[in-house]
Image (cartoon, rainbow, N blue to C red; front, side, top):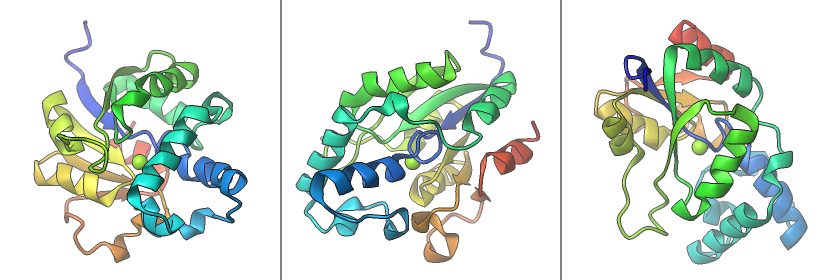
Amino acid sequence: MAQRNREVLALDKDEVVYPFVQEFAAWHNLEYGTNLKLSDFNTYEFDSVIGVDVPETVHRVHSFLHNHRHDMVSPIEQASEAIDRLSNRFEIHLVTARHPDFRQTTEEYLREYFGDTFQSVTLVGHAATMDVLRTKAEVCYELGAVALVDDSPRHVSGCAELGIGGVLFGQYPWNQLSCHDEVHPDVVHCRNWNEVLAYFDV
Ligand SMILES: [Mg+2]
């Protein structure tokens, strides 16, 4: 459409648009009688946070994605206003590590809270569930994205290695830069959506 002349900006979903850990922890506490808090997630490898093996972790995450009332969950603070402003300048695309089976759930949520702002949704999945795993950096490269906004140091570093802007989003236990020596030096850390807007000068 007539938007090809706009630069492409890729956004992650979980913890950037949707508060996954907060919702998953509350759901898990009810289902399994645990007392998980956001501060327990000092890694995004949930198996080591929950204390079960990877297949059981995948089963629980997928049960949550299947059964939770996502439509009742407000997006991350300021995400709606910020993405709306960004969409005036950028073509916005979603790149998530959710399994491709959750395309419908993912798209329904975006439509409900963001209308038709997202031009495409790519679900790459996770190493534990995919025979062939495309990295988010590869997807961003194919999209021609100028940057990826993502809470994962690994994904934004992967982008930076390809010369794509890596914007590390949020202040979460699992993404404090002091804990990640391997973070690419070109990665920029924005603690919230206001800082993302300031970084892109919109
Ligand atoms: Mg994320």
